[in-house]
Image 1 (cartoon, rainbow, N blue to C red):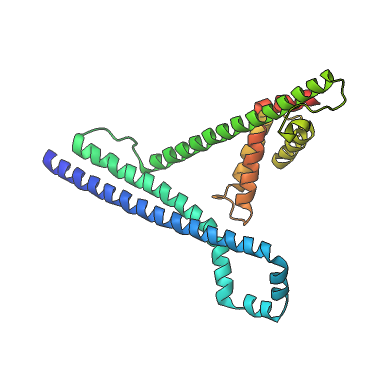
Image 2 (tube, rainbow, N blue to C red; image 1 turned 180 degrees about the vertical axis):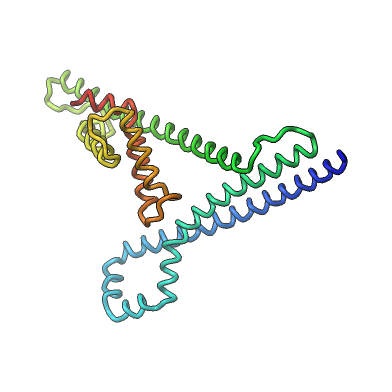
Length: 261
C-alpha cells in the first residue's frame, strides 16, 4: 500500500510541476503582450501629443467620422485601452491560481511520498494564506515607500532650515549660500500642508484626525474601491489614490502637521 501511495505521490508531484511550468510560461507570455500593448498605446498617445492640433483637425472633419464609426478601428482602440488593464488583472489572477493549485498538489504529493502532515487541511486555507502573503507584501512595500517619502521630506526641511540659518548669519540680505539645488531655497511647509490636507480629504477625515481614525477611514475606502470588489471604470485609479493618501499620512507626517498648526 505504501508503494502505491508513493507512486501516486510522485505522479501528483510531476503533474504539479508541469502545471506550475505551464502557468509560468502563460503568465510570462501575457505579461510580455501587456507590456507591448501598453508601450504601443503610450507611443500613440505621445504621437497625438506631438501632432495634437493636426490630428484634432483631421478627426473633427468627415475623415474623423469615417474612422471613428468604423467598428474595426473602434475595437482596436478599445483593445489598446482595455487590454492592459484586464491583462494585468488576469496575470494577478493566474499567479493566485498557480500558487493555491500547485501548493495544494505539492502538499498532497509530499504527504503521499513522505507521510508528512498537510500544511493546511482545506483548499480554502491555501487561498486565505495566499491573500495574507499578498497583504503582507503590500504592507511592506507601503512601509518602504513611506520611509522613502519621509526621508525626502526630512531632507527638504533640513535644507530649508539650513538655508534660513545661513541667511540669518549673513544678515538676511539673501546672499548666495553655495547651494546648487534650487529646492533648498523653497519653504516646503506650504506644499507639505497642501498635500497633507488633500490626503485627508481623499480619505474623508478631518485635518486633526489621529492615526486610528485615519487607519479606519482608509480600510473603509480601500474596501469600497478595491478593484476586486468595485467594477466601476475608475475603481483602480481611486484605489491607488487612496493608498497614496494613506502612505502620506504616516505617524511622522501627522506629528509634523500638528506641530505646524
